[in-house]
Length: 392
Image (cartoon, rainbow, N blue to C red; front, side, top):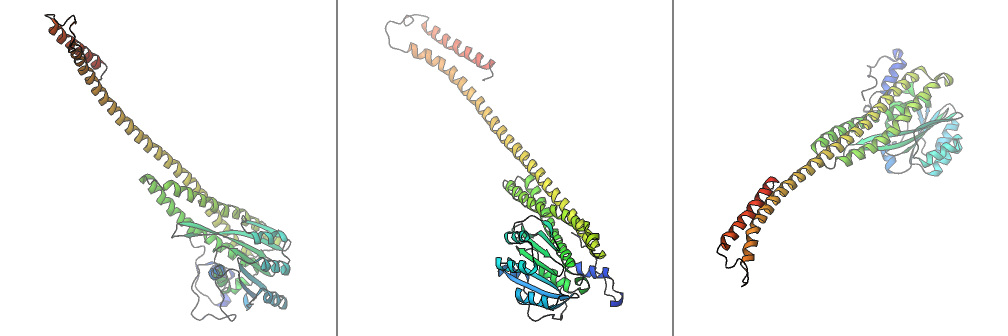
């Protein structure tokens, strides 16, 4: 997927527009400056580390787009948020325990149905509103080059007036990069949890681009293998088709979700720049969904072509076997015909070679010419018969 917005050159703060803030925040992830300011003591674990170490809490409190506290636990986060009612809490959980989710539900008054979905996972992408809280389920994806497979992750987002909670199941997406990008653009972060939600949506959708590229390469390789007669290509087509079904389940509902968010712009007073950004994300999701639909159709067509080629190959092999069998039958016919012709004089000679005294033709003067002539007549007759039947 091409870069969504070009990065702009820095301008004086007085002339910096909100649009330029969006371009900086939603552009490619760049390495941090050599000496970045430390908003809070202590390193923050990355999403990968969180996934490897089990349930790891990443929590921070923001005011006017700037991090003002980095609590070490959920309890500290709750206390900090109560002490700073004008702040925003951003809490990230990776494979949380049931107790952690229940404590969040009690603190932020989360709906039981949404909490149950977050604990069980394996949900389809959806968007549900419970009063002032928005519950969003996203399916992220990443392409594994080593195994040429698509790995899917699940992300649950709780969005409230002063908090945003992410519950991640799986390795994707990398929310630490989203947090870092947002903290580098406080003008955007101060817009509140809604801006963070749209940044997460952008990260999830951007993560689809390498998957689309990897799948396209796989399909190109499969086409080469199909026409090259690879016997294992059918299995690869089937496995990739199953992954495209999962990919389609991740992208197709997301189109309706984004249109649902756009439908609530006027009702919930969404910032104008957030509206433009969400429309841009919706366009990319629609494009990705169409590509996935095209991949499924292409794999179906390739599977049909492969079945046709396999059938043709089998027919050719059967034809070759039939031709070989026909030639073998012709040879058998010739051998059988000559065996029958040679059997006739043997039969006559055997009969007259018996040592009996009382045989009518045994003392006949014309007995020998008669026996030889009989042999010749029988052999000639058999030869003519076999010749007319194309056995010889």
